[in-house]
Image (cartoon, rainbow, N blue to C red; front, side, top):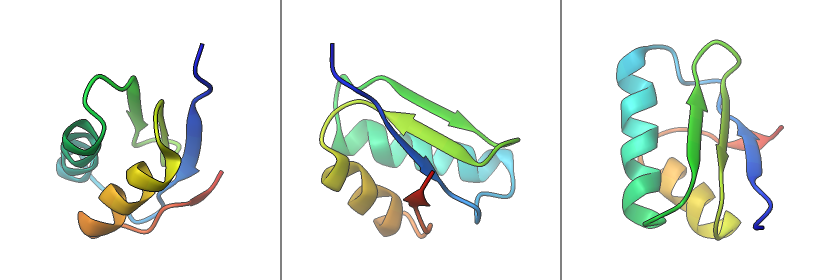
Length: 66
């Protein structure tokens, strides 16, 4: 089983942000297991950590270690 990467994305402030981050990760990591939680600002995903972080940054957000 692949270990999930968990990041904090404090600049996600609304459901639109959640959708944007989710879509960016889905495009960068096809088939990855993705969870985006607005209440805790946590994003978790399986797959390549560097690709996931880069996708979040390219979408305009700031991922940090959880």
